[in-house]
Image (cartoon, each protein chain N blue to C red):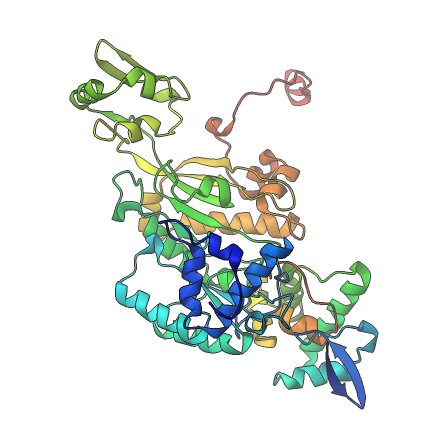
Length: 397
Length: 113
């Protein structure tokens, strides 16, 4: 790029595949400040440390979230990245954009920022990179003019995100995009003005394959499931049997060993099915999810920060989200509010809901938010023999 | 390091205008900082500023935003924390971290806020 020598970055441009260095260079050809981004990155490779300061107080008027501050540690050397903030912009559920919309977004990104995007960040937001606090308000207003709003950051409800759902996928058990849009609109205050002890994420996946990885990285994951039996087409099974070894690739891979394939007949003991979808995904023409569709709710997944990573636990094994859709998701929003009220009352600063529930006990938590435990949420029965039988003894007396 | 001129003395602030030496804080300085953002401090503003300073002195850390919202709801007799949280943005339009904390002369909150 001329201004800075970047031998280490140049290594990352080699090969036929896309390169982030090449993309940043293309942005830098139009944006002076992005030239310094390349320079700073090269320097951080040389020094072996990142040269960004953590956090910073940036934002737009009326919102407490949506803009993430990035300040350079070496602004004298790279003045262009002294302030190089990130805007989180609420994405469209399912990530559908017209090319015209993309061009408008790109024009805004060129005009007010460093000319580069994260499309999308792992939060599910469109991220516009490289603007200063002085430009933030104009950037925000021009986004609003084309119908985009800022998303969540900090101790807010982070921008909910959804898989492509019924728009493009045969397995979606509910309308993820509709749910995501409605829930986002309902809780927009919580997105824009951080009200919690720490972040809270909701993600919507249409089936247990979980394309948004909600089960591992959202505090509340809504995952489509079915309640009845997997639909089997034996003729199509026979066709698959001619092309690969069903015993080896399907039956033996079933985690709950509930499939059998004998004398050309494929059967599933659905009682023991854990809905991993491996068999359906391996033989999509022969097997289909059942007809009684809804969603399960899992709570408390998070990344390692503070207390170690965790997966969500099953809160509701089956919730009729398709019926709730007709009621404007009132059951769902009510439940979320009860969870937040519980968090509000018992939580500590920087404690995610999953950590709080662990500290408090799942049983106590479910009692407080008014959910009856279901046998399906118990992974195995209690093995500890030291149980008090006071109540029972009293009754007998 | 940047400085602001106030009543003839130079007060050291960081890049974002937070004062560095908490002992330099005076109520007049809070009024002065607020005025720069075009905000006239009312009684409710002051109750929050005094409360957050007390909290900081006790805990050596800024309160969670949830507590600020609760306090605001209490002060303004609002029905719930949610309303309290909205009210904060009426009082401090740039948000509690960027205005309330700055005017109270406390150190910048950490974390991804």
